[in-house]
Structure formats: structure tokens, C-alpha cells
Image (cartoon, rainbow, N blue to C red; front, side):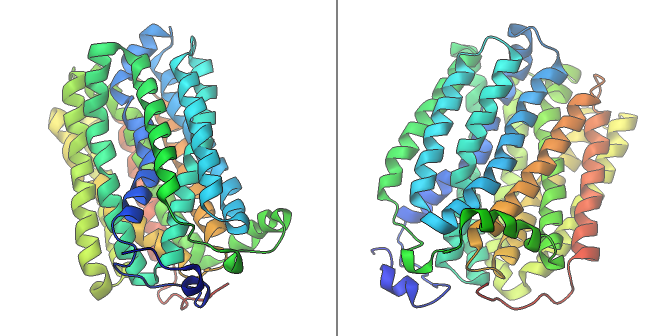
Length: 415
């Protein structure tokens, strides 16, 4: 079936269109959302090799992840108001062009500092698709239906990080680490071509007419909303732990426990399988159980898993399995926390969906910067920094959901 017409969208601040967009729009949205993970996951197995080739230590190479997260976090604050003002599709296309340029720059880098700079460019471009894809879901679907759809999209996009490290390990063996970034160039070009089939979900009649300067100033007002802070904190602390996991596990697994790059890809994939399973469960039960309730209990599970990880990382109990098992639980909670936190925040700001999506994303990936950087700065050749960073992230995630987020959130409004 064809996408909904613009007149149908304008008549209501939220359009419930279950099934009316067919498969094309969800597939493209999944591709856009997947840029957050594939841009990093594909080259994770190559981190130790890159460190040797660029004459850098483990901490410096891990900063390529932190640098990417800085660009991804700050860039979302730029694209959100632009998407509310000028529509979704044009800004996404510009972002994809920047992503391609940044990926090519990474492939041609001769030093770790050049790599960090190009990763910033790559991230600013990649985040346009991610932040505005979330806003597109809010354009098309109401609260619980949006949570179902976002969980489904996240399940589909989880294929990228599931196969990313495995594929990256194979590319590393066959063609070297630079080829990984040339593959990302190709992914960006193909996604840009697919964008021409994506309809504009925010027609002129529903766009935010305020100036960009005023829209950027509106972030301050959003930050004064306790409900938004609760949702943002839950997702933000989680992402701090997730990117500590992304930055720390290559060296914890490959260097400390002598796991091969190919086997590392398989171990990393177990966490993605957990995310996919949790997303599928969330999509099936969220309408019956409620997004906020699922969010709270998942953050508690994340806190417990983080504390268990810190214990095993410090003592060495269980060896490699002692790391893999609590990490699996922590990472899997993403499937319950992210979709419900994002949709809970977006449901209360329909007309500023792009800005709210950007703010949520900036908090999430800004926290990811801190998590990845802490693992890099305190790297000591053991899994202990990874363990205590994720434990703190889990505790902060639970505190945001249980102590900051109000028990009864306000109903949807078209603010």
C-alpha cells in the first residue's frame, strides 16, 4: 500500500497508520537507525591491528570511538531543529553525504589523530539519519504503537551490529583494516540512493515555524522538564555502559583473554541477539504492560548485571565466561529501555519531535562519550575498568527511571 497522503497527516498531530506504509518505509528507517551501530561495530575487531599500524596505544585508538560519539552527540542537537523546520528527508541526505566523506577520510588516515578527526565528520553525518528516523516514527504513529514500531525497527537494525564485527573480522583478514572504511563508504552511497524512495513525513503544514536560533534556545526549556530528564537519564546512563562495552571488550577479549578477532565477532553478536530478543518481547507486550513499567524493571536488571560484572572483572571469577554472561544481560536490557525511553519522551512533544529526539540522542551518545573515554583513560590491561564503568552506568540508569521519572507521566500533547 502507498504511504499516507500529506493531507491525511496534516489533519492530526499524530497519525496512526498501522500497515499503511507497507514495508518500504520501515526498511529505510531501519537502515538509517542502523548507522549508529554499523559505523563502529564493523571496525571493532580491527582496533588492535589499527593500534599497531598507526603506532598508537590501546587508549588512543579507543578514543576514535569517543571522538565519533562526540560528533554523534553534538550533531544531533543540530539536525533536530533543522528537521522540525525544513522537513526530514533533505537534512538526512546532507548527513549521508558527510558520512561518506568522513568514512573515506578514515580509510586514508595515516595517524590516530587524523582518524579521530574524520570520525567526527562521519558521526555528524550519520546522526542526521538516526535522529530524524526516530522523529519520523513519531510523525506516523501514536504512543504505544510508536513503541511497538520502534522496537520492531530496532530488531531489524540489530542485524547490522550482529553481523558487523563478524564481517569486519573477515574483511580485516582478507583486505586489511582500511578496507572496512571503504565498505562504509559503499553503505553510505547505497543508503543515499534508497533515500529517494522515502516519503516526506513532515509536510509544510506541520513544520515548526520558529527560527532556528529560537529553536536551539528551546533546549533549555526542555531540560527543565523532569519527565524528559527521567527518560533521557535512563537511556543516557545505559548508553554510557553500552559504549564502554563497545570500547572495552576488544581489548578485554582479544588482548587479555587471547580471543581471535573472528571469535570476538561471535561473542559480540551474542549481546545483539539479546537485544533483538528483548525488542521482540517489548513489541509484543508494551501495549498490555505499559512502556514505563517495562522501562523501570529493565533498568533494575541493568544495574544488577553491572554490579555482577564489576565483581567478576575485579576478581577474575569465571574467566571469560564471567565477563560474557553479565555483559549479555546488561546489553540485552537495551531492547526494553531505549524504545520506551525515546517514545515516552517524544509522546509529550509532538510539534518539537525533532528537537526532543535530538536532545534524547545527544544525552545518550554524550554519555557514551564518557563511558568509552573512561574505559580508554583508565585502561590498565585488565577488564576491571570495563567492569566498574558499566556498574556505575547501570546504577545511574536505574536511579533515573525509579527516582527521577514521575510515577504517572503527563498525557500526550502537541507541544
